[in-house]
Length: 519
Image (cartoon, rainbow, N blue to C red):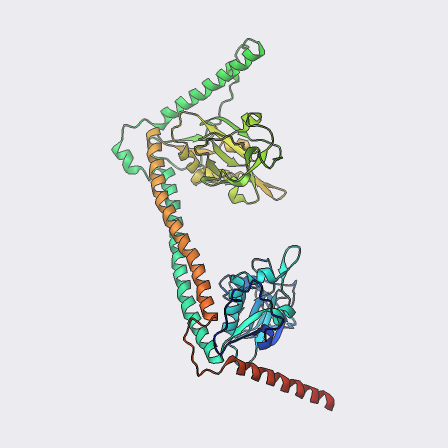
């Protein structure tokens, strides 16, 4: 029965089938194995019948018609309740997802799916879950035939070479029932964990929103009514910004051996002030400011492509995500760090994405944490170097990513040749809420404390969710190695079932031959 089976990468190759079981090919227990038909005339209006495609089998092996396309006209191949449906064409990672059709309805299926119609005595759920377990274990990833953008497993090798452990018929039913109950309970537990994770995400968003609206520190303001207004700090920042510009200009004149021209100070480029027309009100003591007002310089990074496998690190654009900078997401430039001084980042810099394929990631911001190495930022990241008078730059990294500040960015994103982007002038004009300096420190501390708790809970949830995947595989492995439900010695062995299937096939062949002769 196992001749021709491919057992390389088979997850149960070292396990002997329990008494009464046997191993055979899928084709030994299938009355027909056939792929579906392609259709370029799908519709989303429900005309005709649903055309089942790979997306209609989820990663847990469940049949899912939440997103479906329909086909009308002549339907050459249809599905019936109890058919096993195998995903024969997909990415190597997803090929082999399998489900059983649970509904008695009119359904067509695409050529990316293979319908396995079983012989009497075979439980469809038992077979579908076993094939899906092979997918989960990676068996089909190693068995598929790779093409340019996808992979496939044809009906013939599926029928002839894929192993299937066959239990006695009544035991198949008991195993299928036990799996339905256990996996249903597991799914309910996973769904509960997902709901908790979603609520943590909502809580995190609420904390950040409260941070930039002043709600988070409302009680603190009541206890500290004498805090210096943000407008006074902003005036000192603007004065320091101008002083630095004048100092830099004098150094340029001196280096050129020239005296400063008359009225040279009048050429100072005033930073763009915030347009508060459509901005929400702020708490007493707060004001609006722009990124340019708070920065000594705003510039793009190094413009040439990385050209080395080691050397001076340069960040990728993907290193910046909202609130987070991945310093390990890097490439390399040749030469030495001093060749790129003007494009190096410093602790406390804000980095904004200029371009991205996704609008959601354009103009997002992250702060450079404490670093002790020299790292370059690329042209597709805009660097804002905040002035030293700003004691809590982390607050502005938060503010730039949410609320009115983020809406300002989203309204200015432009798409060219499929690439969404934002200009440096728009980044300069991004409005951010500006609290008093002491309140900035309090906000950052409170946010870090609460986000730390959320992050800890998220890590715990993620570990539990990953554990659920391992538990699912363990349950399935136990099921198909005879360890999930008790064996009953009185069950008719699978060998008898296979004998009947073989005999019935021989009888059918004889009847067809006799009928052909009569014609």
